[in-house]
Length: 125
Image: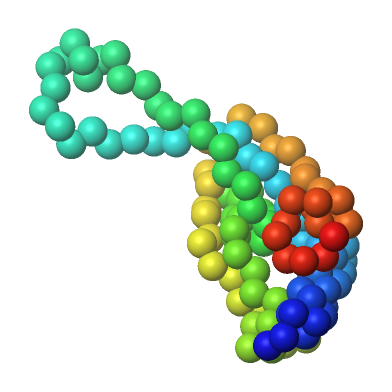
């Protein structure tokens, strides 16, 4: 693929993603408390001092119900997994299911694709 074709492909993917985000899905950042497991041998005092882990996850909101929020960090905007697919067979990967009782905060994020061209190395400057 020559550089001009690659740029056109990237622009097409950006257009699909912008349309998809505008109409179908939100990008969010979740601050939540994760459970942990310690497999090393530790003393009773050390065990009592252990805490939960405060974490952040960023992804596309794909579902929310009374008990959990589901986010995905990958969406595939290509012919095989078309984000505009009317059959709903969009390709997602790296799904996180986070219990709502563990969530501290949720922030809605927006991507400005024109602004992002400054830091993406795709030749679109």
